[in-house]
Structure formats: structure tokens, C-alpha cells
Image (cartoon, rainbow, N blue to C red):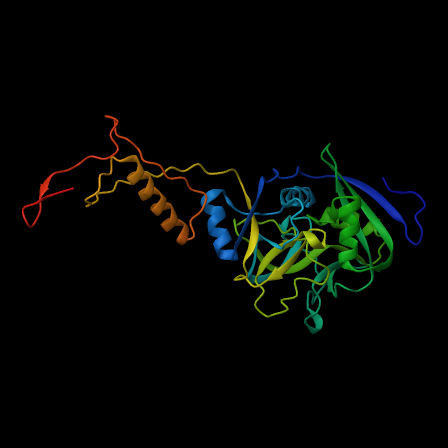
Amino acid sequence: MVWLHGAIPLFGVFLMFLRITAQPTPHQYHFINQSLSWPEAQSYCRLKHADLATVDNMDDMNRLAEALGGDIKPSWIGLERRGPLRWLWSDGSGSAHFTNWKEGEPNDAKGREGCGEISEEGTWNDHVCGGGRSFVCYERRSDGMVRYVFYSGGSWTWVQGQDICRKQHTDLAHVRNGQENVVINNLAGNNKAWIGLFKDSWTWSDGSGTSFRYWLNGGPDNYFGNEKCAAVAMSLHGRWDDAPCDRRAPFVCQGGLKARKMVVRMKMSTGVDLTDSTVSATLLQKLETSLGNHRMSDFKLSWRSDKDGQIFQRQEQQGAAGRPGC
């Protein structure tokens, strides 16, 4: 069923319903206010939690913003630039498995065509993302149905269409099969319109296939030529920016806290009485300082007694000069 929705100036909005699958499980985020490079932050998150933050959709993005609170410094997330360019879906659905490209497309004319549109005859074409087009959104509902929404008028960039879709609905349209392609083409009235296709070479640290992105307008721009890691910038409304991976910044981990305990047995040769609480406390403090100097954090050291309640046991042995050692 198709009908005109409301009286909206300059453009029309048309709706259609289909069925779609449920959303993925939301992530648990932890903001770490410690300045590390992206690789160091990745190692930290993998040790303490699961990995650097992955963002699947706008609901996750809102939770990520809550985790960051009022902190406005750019903070690492788990996205890095590596791998080949590929066509992905804006809503996080990953690679475009079903395609309906026009013959000879995508051709990336002049190396500038990074966004996808549905043409008048229903085939797809790559186009400059800043070009003016109508666009098709979809809206996922709790009953398992999806509502497609067509915005006519032809004056929006791909990013502008994406922003409207994410604010008012779920995202730009994701086309999974030929039937949906026909539905969207009919809804658009055989007009050119943006769909959720975009070209990208970024990969998530945890191996996730989600293709959700929330870049600054015009980004990622690789301004310095070595900007291969992504950070969320709360000072810019939570948008993402690319930056050199060796830059030191706070970061966001995902997953629950891993509880780990390590027991270390030491054999020492010393002339002091280790059973003296002052001596053993001083030794423990020196060990903590040494670990801190090696960039280890969030640990707690303590002496552990054996089943007889003893922490230190003196072992008599004959030294080289005939003296007992310990």
C-alpha cells in the first residue's frame, strides 16, 4: 500500500511496508580516560574487556555518546583503514551481496563516485556523493516490518539524505533482493534516488562486518596522508574523524571487564628479613612502580600465603663461601 504522507514543503514523502529481520544485540561501552596510541588502546581493550568499541547503528552511537559523557577530546574507537575498497550498506548490514548495477557501472568516473543511487529504470549507478538527488529511507519496526520512505525533490547530497533517514527513520534504504529493488524503484516513481550504498576500505578491530559509519561531513579525508584510525569527537556532535594512529588519545572499549588474577612465585637472595611487614610492603611498592614504568595499569599486587599461612619461607643452603643463603 502506498500513500502520500502529510504536507511537507518542497518535497513529498511516500511510504511502503515490508518485513525485515531484528536488530543486533547492543554493545556495552567503557570510556578509558588514558592517552594511548590506537594500537596501545587496542591492546588495552583486548586485555581488560573485549576490544575497542564497535558501533552497529544509531542506537549504539547514542550509547557511545552516553559513555563518553561530557568529555570533548577525540577518543579512539575500533575502526581502522585497511583492506580493499568495497561497496557497503549505510545501515551497518555489511557488503552488498545482492547488486543490480547498470551495465558498465560502477565506473568511479574521475575517481570521485563513492555513493550509490537507483536510476530511473531500477538499475544502480555510482555517483558523486555531493550531487543533488531524492532519496529512499527505511524504518525498522518492532513487529518485524520495515517501512520504506521516499523523499522527492532531488536536492540532497548522499550525507544529507543519510542524516534525515537516521533522524526520522532508521537509515538509507538497504536493498537485499530483486523484489525489494522493484518496490523501491516503484516507490521512487522511476526517479533517480540515493540508496544506502557507499564505497569504503575501513575495518573494525573486533572483526565485525558492520558497515555503520558516522563520519564528519566530508570525512574521512586523510588530510595528513597517514590518517588510518578513527576517533569519535564529542565536540563535533559525536561525529567520527580519521587521525594518525600514533596520536595519543583516550579511547572507548566494549564488553564486560575481564577479571584476571596472576600468581607469581619468586625466589630471592637477600640479607633482609622479608617477614618484616615494613620490608615486604616496601618491596611490593617497588614492584608496582616497576610495572607502572612498563605502561601496565589497573592492577593490584598483594602477597599470598600458602596453606600453612606463611608468605615467605627461608631456605637454608650452602653458598659458595660456605655461608647459608636465603
